[in-house]
Length: 261
Ligand SMILES: NC(=O)c1ccc[n+]([C@@H]2O[C@H](COP(=O)([O-])OP(=O)(O)OC[C@H]3O[C@@H](n4cnc5c(N)ncnc54)[C@H](OP(=O)(O)O)[C@@H]3O)[C@@H](O)[C@H]2O)c1
Image (tube, protein in one colour):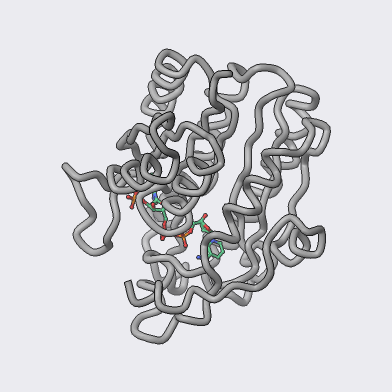
């Protein structure tokens, strides 16, 4: 039987990289998407899509196909080309995980409006482009989208207004797309309300001990659970605590020594 295919954005580090590993171990072929690649790494943060692909292949075994596609999700033509490539090379796409995001800190009114547009473009338009170019080509009844939101969507006091605004928009986009794609593609959202260890998030927090942050594997549990639900299970926005209470996510984790690198 052909293996299911998952497209994961923000796959160069953090939660996205972990998703590549755990989805590969669960039997998916992997398309790892982000900007940082071996050829063009991020100067400030570790991690590349090529590294994620190597880890996915190691976790998925000999049958696992995994490719890295360097792409900025703001590039609509690039997302369209990504969809063309995935359907040409794999013949299918079963799961899209819209995980890539930025969370610009600082007072909005003291920053250039270009930064606001950047957050909108990455956190809202990127997921829209992925859904726009992938969902209509997914096998009706088989497709799944999981969007990654944050509790910041509910917390204006978080102090990152573009992040709050874009994550709230992503949740609305989830609910709206679920209606538009009813019966064809299930569109759901994880409103991550915990601190999950990732290279990007901890870098924004400065120096500190992050060993009590949760392990990113909890996000893999949540995504895999959503992926297994019937297509009629759609339009949900659920926190990790809610998913845990339903038995969808393992018990509380601590990233521990992994936080040291
Ligand atoms: N960690 C937490 O506790 C937490 C809490 C709530 C919600 N979240 C959400 O969880 C998701 C993952 O967060 P994380 O903590 O793993 O973040 P991270 O370590 O900063 O990783 C973010 C990923 O997004 C990619 N990305 C950023 N801009 C992109 C663009 N324009 N095009 C393509 N890829 C782009 C980055 O790759 P490149 O730089 O290589 O492009 C990177 O792979 C995000 O949606 C975040 O909002 C996280």
